[in-house]
Amino acid sequence: MERNAIRMCEILVGLPEINVLWLDDVPDKALRIGVESRRSGEVCPGCGQNARIKERPSVELADLPAFGRSVELIWRKQRWECVNPVCDVSSWTSQDPRIAPARGGMTVRAGRWATLQVGKHGRSVSEVAMDLGCAWHTVNDAVTAYGAVLIDGDPLRIGEVSALGLDELLFFRKGAWRQLQWSTCLVDVNKGKLLDLVEGRTTEAPSGWLQKRESSWRERIRYGTLDLCGTYKSVFDNELPHVTQVADPFHVIKLANAKLDECRRRVQNATMGHRGRKGDPLYRCRRLLTKAKERLDDRGSEKLVGLLKAGDPDGEVATAWKAKEAIRALYEHTNTELATQWVETLGAELKEADKPEEVKSLGRTLIRWKKQIAAWHEAQVTNGPTETMNNLIKRIKRVAFGFTNFANYRIRALLYAGKPNWSRLSEATPR
Ligand SMILES: [Zn+2]
View 1: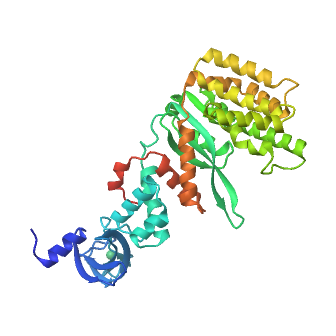
View 2: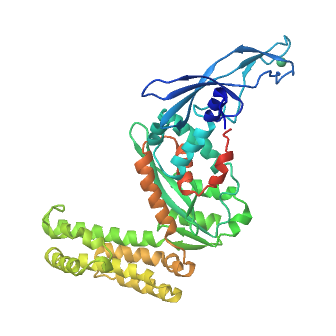
């Protein structure tokens, strides 16, 4: 048990080799604690001669909250100068990386804690800044700096990958005109892990990323999942020609739903002469149409049939709906041979002359991508990455809209969805 007042103070503050100089207890504000390093007597890093103190500058650091109050640490530092007249070194400030990194307005322990809150638990920077009683950018800088240690400072994070997914992701709005900026995510499909984010949605960045990996790493990849567009296909064709390309079921079904929607809007316009309004039958059934068939109860099914009867005189929307359900049924079994046949037959059927134009276009896409679509049944890769990315998008949108810096955004996304080794955080020290 400790009864010495000075020691009690030091134990409460809990930093190595410091003297507690003073406490400033301003009601309803952060508790301010003045400290200084106990170490003294530095030698010049240039010539090795003894140095003398030139100044005692103070830095203000946000620290972890204590006893329900936010805490600000005022660290009185030593600025040294060399006494040797022929030495080039002029002056330097003593550092203690156990207390705080050389830059940034936060103690090491607060920086690590903020990184965990924002990076792992997906809390917003402003929320965490409120907890710490400090500025938004202080937290954001810390998360970016400690995050970089866990992401780019850990060569083991990426690991071996047997199924690689490429997908586009809207990441932020840039500049005065808030232009949409796209990025490409590289995903470990089996582990549901975001491997990296690169700028743009062209072939360039993901190809460059893959070229930087070891050839042994690339050779271990067996499957490559992608959406139904040519960009990522050519990345796989060029950089990973040995992998089996797999169309992501999420994108296939999404396309079927998009075509259904297009068809509904066209028929709506053709029959009513205007865009969908509240009372229009086709407008009223738009949600029922995209809902999975098995999730419609009897009432929903009846309603859908009734509304289509009223608003879809030539049965075009109904045909597009059946096409969507037929594509969904493709994923209800896992038989590879059946899948190839199914895609070919279905694609040919949808392309027939009497089908609505949207359905025909869907049929053509199916035929064009039949190999990749049917390959899902062989690869049996899950929908995991798509789900992960959707969650990520939701989080990031809610929590971090307003990102203007890709590097910061990338670190944040990777902390949240890239499964970093969080046990490394207790040792993490930013450069
Ligand atoms: Zn010197």
